[in-house]
Image 1 (tube, rainbow, N blue to C red):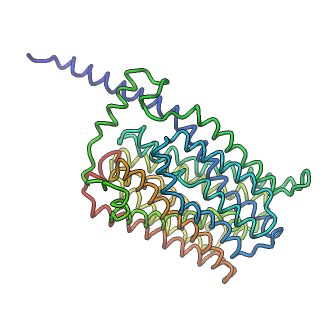
Image 2: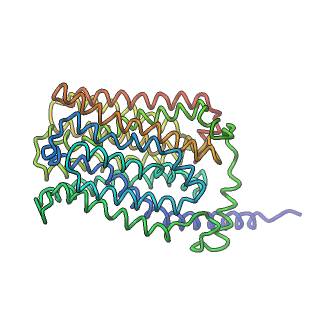
Image 3: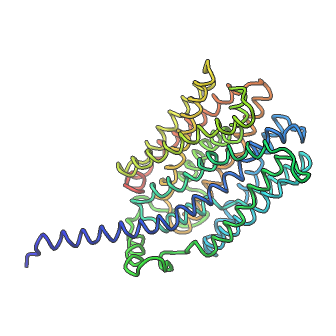
Length: 444
């Protein structure tokens, strides 16, 4: 018997309506809270760059010792990333992410009581240990809540928390620095204290706000829970066989190549992020207060650019070029900033360069999400992020080393640009070795 076309159209429309309604609810429930989590995570990681405007002279830090202190966090972070994410896989994201936030908030606030270079090194190492597993854990959590076709948009929205942290945190931090001493503590110590404690509150809130899996989501209607669970379970298998064990993941060529690409992009990322206030101040000879507002400009551009590029990537279903091309543009922009004849042109170069980093870094995670699943996803995400975050150590240290040797940031910007370009080249090479369905499919 022939089914009337109107019936088919109505059923399809009902299905689309259910899908749209469900994803809208999931996005409204999870993404704003996770943006707030990431804001506090990133701010507590990089607020040392603003504290440095006063702290370096108080603690007698040179460019080299500050660069080491800024980057040493990633030594502990890298060492504990995979164990932390495997624990998350076992005990659940809700409890483990809450634990991470509470401990890093307490340690971040405790930075207010460091007294010399060695205590700063110890505090940064402890902060890295506390944070280990946060970002790959969030990525794994998003994969478990958003179908492939919605994933890049969800990841991009979540990662907006990164530039938002500086758009808000930069002027906030330099405003705090302008207050001077209060109750026997210098301004930079108040900066650490007041920006660390909110993470503790968010960690406590995460215990009741986050939901472990769609089947437990009482804030969804039964048909919405069923649709989401079925959609996620019926995702098309990757065109590439995912590694079957932890050891196989560690030996997997594409996974290791993506880890190397991540290291290159994060070398540029943190080489800029943890030095940006000092770079901006050196370019424009600004006051500390003005430095905070000007430092926010590249992050505003990065936030807008990453949303636009992420949406375009979802519409076209293409991933590798949307990761690599922004990296190439960003690299060229850093070279422009290095040799710009005026502060305005240098700021333009920094803004375009930061936008290239953020666009590339936001869409990057759709590639490992497409080629890894199960335990290999938990291990692979942690492996990529842990190796990648070695760039978080080398970037700030390289910046400090070159600046100490030359007295300028121009050669550093060129080096960071080359690293960013290399990350894009590696992504294109991985895309050539992985079956097309694994990396080019819409949402994958």
